[in-house]
Image 1 (tube, helix red, strand yellow):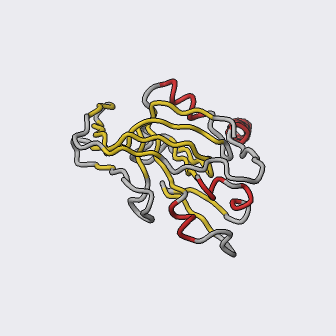
Image 2 (tube, rainbow, N blue to C red; image 1 turned 120 degrees about the vertical axis):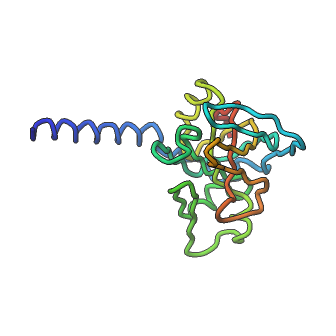
Image 3 (cartoon, rainbow, N blue to C red; image 1 turned 30 degrees about the vertical axis):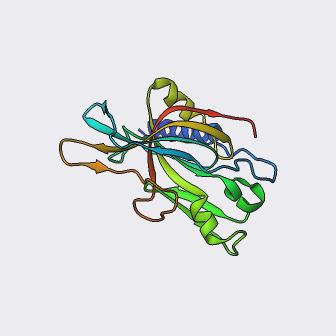
Length: 199
């Protein structure tokens, strides 16, 4: 019995090491990598997409080129089968390695957190030039692309901001602005394409 426990422990350690290696942070030279804020075109009457028992209602066409600040994979929460990955993105000053070196960034429980000892840029710039996004892959190809995304990479994403609902009353709403913070400030993104791009 002890032998099987040791084997299981080794497998878990090996899986954790592989996961870390695949998603290890990528270093970038100082300088703004993604100067532009995300592009959003609101939709007055959204279409509906079905994902199992989840209905997605499109709210806006959405596109961004941004730096990945952090990633967190989810397997067990209520939204994990729909949105298995959260990526925290930064653009403008929040895509600059010189700025990010002075900001501690983490993710958990579908939130993105930052901490500073001394502000390298104004607080409001941090808040409006970064966001945590819950990503819904549109197909297996996009899912595989998401699995390869690493913190530090510059990526281009295209898709829709969506609201999600189930017949049992479960709801998940997207933020519609980059100006908000706190609970409800994350974007729920139906991803049609995502890929790493050269700085």
